[in-house]
Image (tube, rainbow, N blue to C red; front, side, top):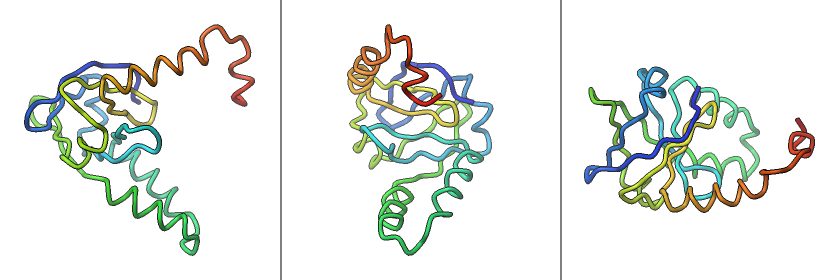
Length: 144
């Protein structure tokens, strides 16, 4: 399970340190792909990736949007491994897509982690915070 917010840096080789609390679930392998909205990246354990993959592939292959999405999403994915120091390399194409610079933020989102540029995360979180802070009926509004 991925929870919390961790501020990190990305080195000149495109590597980031994975928070120690995330590492146990990532020993078997890491899959990094484009995020669905905003310009962030998704980071999955191999097990969680397989669940998502099966869900996507269970859609009707004859639907054009299913094919377009599958090509877009799966072509961006990269299987990576952590090194001895707990670092993982992010492919340059994904670094560019997410606009990652020196400062990044890893965000735990239960079944995945997300990798954001510090600037983009700040903007996104500020907007989400103002949307949900002080609301009494948030769970009901979201259907929980």
